[in-house]
Length: 381
Image (cartoon, rainbow, N blue to C red; front, side):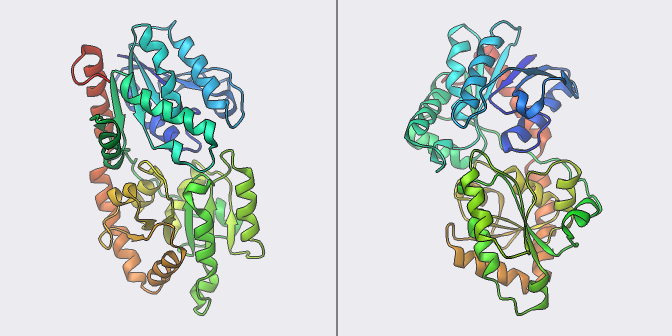
């Protein structure tokens, strides 16, 4: 089968949940002897590399601005793809999926994956939100098959559009534990002495809520005095917001901004953190949360629907009331007072996540969707 992926920034994945998803999915398909092409943006993946673990990389130019980057790249990629032999053109994200109408009108087989409800992100203005809502409609009415990554998104689609998409959740790779070397030298991090947030520094992920809750913890105990907060991530067209985060953390050397991390540094962070915190008010099915659980970390997350699909409160993690900074502070403080609870929740999370979120399952289910699209079986959107 010949498959082309459009809509992501690129691979190998450096940051971004969609990029990590396509990275694992495309490699898995290539390993099964499918011919896979991924359209990448030069600023993310460069132009020199043509192949990545059996996956063909197609660098197409774009305009790297907040509002034009994804749209220009997806449009040009869609046109380019018409002149290839791709049997399935797979779009990722509701914005890029707006352009799936181009190959569909030309008689090509298309699939769309909705990773999250992007129009709800506060960084977008009215025009961008309208564009994304149009993309959402197209995602559910134009491609031959539509995939969503969580049950919560499926319920939204059923309620608003009376459609029944296929749920294929994200997967999680086996953890790769690394000794704490690079980050010890850079930031003087110590094993089990830092709280970790990993993700884009954008308003909907609420790292500001975590900074404020962390700084409000009682410094009475020696442990809290030595504890650090590591924010691993960077701007996503949100430079003003990142500057504000740095401002509210100013003067507190315990709060560390690392920028985006990947590879060995990312593995080091996951290998030695005490607690992973994700305070988001908007997600699809966050891969960073799945990764943290795979490393056996105790995870504390807001009680939005996607997080409830991953965490059973009190069983393999903890939830706090979304947008409630005081509840976040209280739940964090309670965990810090009970190290045996941190250990118990992390161990159980590690066991559960590998059973529930396997990339092998994701790949096999996606191949089934492709075959249905090619044969015409199943609902057509």
